[in-house]
Length: 541
Figure (tube, rainbow, N blue to C red):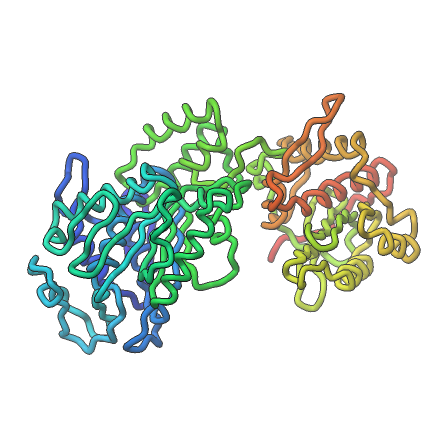
């Protein structure tokens, strides 16, 4: 267990891991700079947590296995500036270069790892406990340390060179400007966007720094993927480190974060979404949470830096210091305001509700949102497994499953007392015509979102009711809807009106539209005197 005394943050390790690695790091990697330069390094709690997770060993690991012996194929660490990502990354690179990071069977008890057996004369040794996984170094390590530029890569390579120079690794390694030689045959290479000739080498480890800046445009997405393939071919692994990224950039960091595979370790401490970075007191709470386990950080200094950057770029400050992934232009609706309205409730069958529907065919998503007569909005469930009424065509062979959407709509119409459905017709004219015929033209309304005046008014109605403190509006906290709200931007039109757009072509806002339509439907139903005031929900899971 690693515990941060300054925060009470606690990480419990209840799995087998190469505990020898953090011990080896602290014995071989001195503090690289500052007033305590050259002194023994002690990993911060979050650094220790990420280290033991990266070297977590499967209980079924067998002698001779390389990457498959570990629980995680690769790792992603997202942390704010000044937490010590660079120096910690340097220790991981050095461990991969000369430390006992390759699984070497299970200890029976009494075994020892001695540096002297592996060319290091520092005299350090480690005693294994019974049942503990043991490690050995790579015989010929070839490692790549990657960043967008020479200045960026220095955040890791500079402390790495200092650690080698000031510690026992100096007799094993020779450091230079662009690479470090390890023993006779190993090396650590620096790779940037201007020096890609080293790609394709049979590496055993890649440290990819600041992957929030790796995109297709600067060719670093291809670099990251090439390195991972190269490491996989040698039985090696990789690690990403980054600040919060701009979601409009479609970066490698975002792709990793959103990947559904379970063999990636992810560390990304975040404050509650309901806390607003614009508010000074709430910003302090955000900093306290995301800098937990980094006792060396002065939060007053962080606040001063954040305030200065916010004068010109609020989103950048929120990414750098708030550890949030926010786009660089103003959102249509403050995500923190939306998150603050999350109060999940359970809706009873035959509750009177309204529905909003927005559909697509093969690119954008299709979604249905619902709202009760007293202003509780939610994503309904359908089918025997209670699936949410949000369809990503990528999950269905590239096409929205129209039969499923039809079945879901039929189920909702039967499960609830649906007073009104506002549906945007494009791509779904036939289905909406069928719904009009089946459920009645007074219940199913073709509501075209392309009408600038009406859509602007509907957007403002929902936005106002989210922002107002005394408004009764609240919602279920649907993660997809939150993400789509976050991606939604405004494009100005004449007469002080706007239309909605995506923050980037790859981002989706399709759950935003039915949320607006459902809320507009409720307002019109209430104005028409069709709402019955009754308690239609109960609390609970």
